[in-house]
Length: 366
Ligand SMILES: [Zn+2]
Image 1 (cartoon, rainbow, N blue to C red):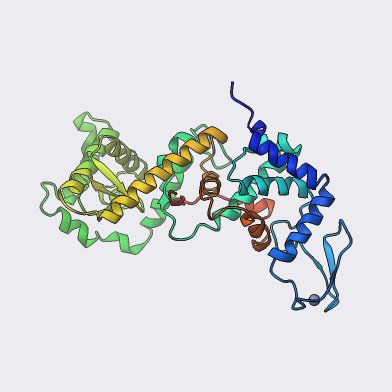
Image 2 (image 1 turned 135 degrees about the horizontal axis):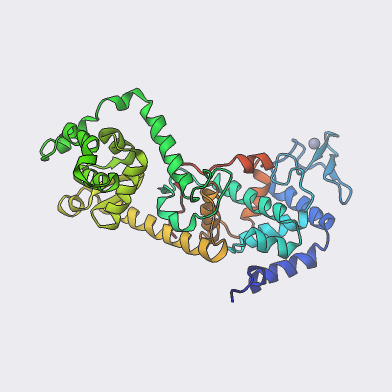
């Protein structure tokens, strides 16, 4: 039988440490106040002026300017009262450990909903620290861990249908852009020597009923024939062929599994043959692709062992959580506490409204 996660000895040790130094929320708050003096941006100019604060109060009086300020306002601790649970959550993350909301609620004896929002708040703040150099991934390679319904899941459909919906909406919004009405010139150049011209290919789906093949098989055939050494996206392929975005995506997944297509960083595809024959990818790009694949594997393993299944809506939060557990240099001692005082408040509504973007950031593999 699986061990209960909150019984992990490393997590228990952190819990015991917090119980020792901060037996109550009021004392945990005092600890956060002391930390804020070192880690938080200054609330006024009076750097050396004495600050007066009563224990257990989130306000302090500055002896220099005479202003009264809240040390939690403008931080992740805004309106927080369960300081002990927050301290425990932060120290668990800084130790590179991951805990599910359920295990965290048992560990700290807080309501499950509260435990979930503490964990998500923290993960969302970490998402905001993922910069533009992070590799991108769609949810497709993460399909095996996306099996939990959220309020975004279409009625009566598998949770992964959310991803298909998002991709479809994305394709629709791309289609509205005027520039996509004309074929990109590099596409025609790349395919002019092929046996099928794009216009001929575009007719095929219309006739597919006569051929006796189902739409999916036809899509695989057409998309397979269209792929070349020029990287192209599922959106473009869908526009060029008038095949629905969902079918194009499914076809690409099949082609990839059959070793006929290769997905490049940024969700672009080339035919597998062209990668071998033509040096379309630099060493650097190939290494990047390999690293991204290994990051995806790490994420899948971590999520499966700790969270089991997650929703499409929240998956970016888990990508960030796994990043914080893997990148020990970036997310070591003091890093989360620093983030707590230097990240604006995250409201409950922000968590409810959060939907992972179509292209999600994933850690650099470390
Ligand atoms: Zn002051």
